[in-house]
Image (tube, rainbow, N blue to C red; front, top):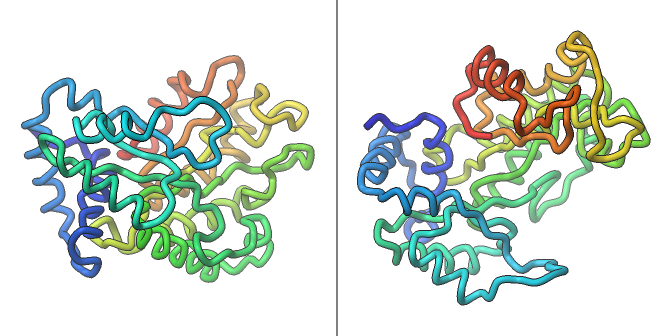
Length: 287
């Protein structure tokens, strides 16, 4: 069975997660990662494949009912969890990774976290960085954040946000690069390259997750999560260029927007997901 290309960044990062249990300096050729992923896929049962789709969040900042930690760990040990969000610190990621190694196939967990403008080292907010027009510094900031996050066991950041923001009433303007699609495209490229470094054969690479696809920044009235109503011309000329640039830069993952676009939810929008992203743009990662 030929391994799906979209699995390589995720599986590669997860396999390299075991570097936390081995050496942090070694580099694994991507072709070897592909062979490893392919061999594991051949051995997986349907239940184990479904288990990899399960995602937990740690109890950090929980405000409601939570699953007991012991129950979560049991599911990890059974190979019934694929990824974890918001696990803070190398000690905790290492501990969970060691539990995952006890599963039948020893498939590592994938750890994701919002690394927006720095990890241990804090940089200016993305909008302020964009105002500098310094692409090299922006890329270097993302590179430093990735190195620090990877050292803590994080493989996946939910950044960069590349939404064009032209309505100051919208509450997330500061997380993007502003109102210009050209500058936004250059910055999207810089951040993707910074996070992902020289490739997923390196232990300091973190998967970028480009968000929010698409037109999230154009919510009616600036109300977060509200509907978006616009022409295809406006969509393509203003709101899509940074996403296309990020895909061309090799972004490993995309995140759907939370709104509907012209009456169709982004999560079920065939034009956005299939025709455009995976068709015209030839995106091979996962959403």
